[in-house]
Amino acid sequence: SLFPCGHWKNWVLSFDDVDHPYGDEDEAALEAEVNGNWTPQEKALHEARLKAKAKRRVRKSSSRSESLSESLSGELADGDSYSSKGKVPVPNDRKSRTGKGRGLPKKGGAGGKGVWGAAGMVYEVEEPDAKDPNYDEVAQGDTVYATVVPEVDERELEKTVNPIVREYFEHGDTKEVQMLLKELNLGHHKYEFSSLAVSLSLEGKASHRELTSRLLRDLVGKVLSDSDMARAFDKILKELPDLMLDTPEAPQMLGQFIARAIADHALPMAFLDRYKGKVDCDHARAALDRAAVLLSMKREMVRLDNVWGVGGGLRPVKHLVKEMNFLLKEYLVSGEVKEAERCLRDLEVPHFHHELVYEAVVMVLESKGDTAVKMCKLLQAFWKIGLITVDQMNRGFQRVYDELPEINLDVPHAHSIMESFTDLCYQESVITKQLRDSCPSRGRKRFVSEGDGGLIKN
Image (cartoon, rainbow, N blue to C red):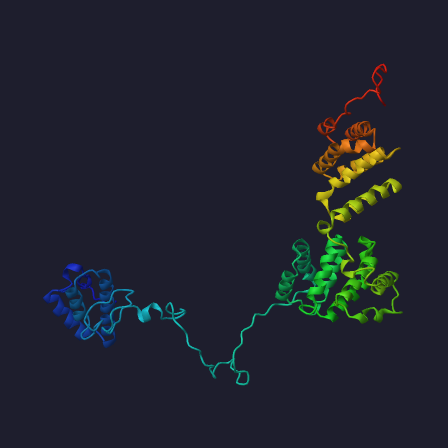
């Protein structure tokens, strides 16, 4: 043991006797024993223990006065100061130890490892370091930063393009489609956008096909080239047998697409010439023949910019009335409800279906035979599938009710025919009871002549 027996109690210090840790006799005996019996190594170890013990006491008694700290440091180690002014440092103190400065953080809090610097600091351009392992002397020059968009994978192409085309069918803005395509990196699959758009429009309405033709016309020269458009139609011609599974009229429609694209200068004029005598598929040959026929016709006879017709909301009312009359007459001859339904849907005027109800009822009043039964069957079919709504049905019948006095001038028995037809429609659940009861009754009864015995004129 480094501590001799009998002197252990003299090494226990307290805060009350810090200034005089030992008595005079004990101190003299300790000094003699140290000088006489201890080796230099033991003496150095002993002094180190004293310094460590004093430092621990200083940490615990940091609130003591400055004079007490100075006395401890002077007694334990001569000439060893903890600061230039003799003050004991506070743990975790970040102030300067040299006594200089105002006591503020280093670099205003913007210095140190892993920090960005003070707010508002502007960094200067750093010169390339030749010692940098990534330094390339040949590649040094003006640095250009560019946003790199990864190329769309072929498997994700259809999922990316289909929402764009379907949304275009709703708003019809070709500029928005151009902007979206420029943001995408389609790469060498760019031509497939046109083929996907045409395939989707074949399954849609005539208005969708018209919008697709306009889109192809506006994309050429801005996003797509003539060669891209030709590759797209080449692909569609190869896929035509598969497209016919969902759309049997695909060859004729594709021929109209090709003719319209050539007329709009979206396809080169030599597109059809490349396929002369080189087509083995009958469906592809039918599509190319359809395009050749349309292009060979005079402009006075057919306008290719209206090859898909005019949208329902843009058609004149007289044209729509004529189409509905023709639809009903064709149905009375053929009796095919499905064909009549298809023709009515192709008109794309659901807000004008009350005209069909009006024309159907007027035909019943002006015709004979089983016309009433057939028309009731047609209205019932349209009512069940929701093609004619209750509002359109009521509006069509109400128009006939309002014009019944004028119709009665040409059809003397119009009131009785109307009453029987409304009863039949009510029994077949085509109209409501309220609409049936609102049917106008026969006009004022007139006698043949005075004194004829009360006979009513037939």
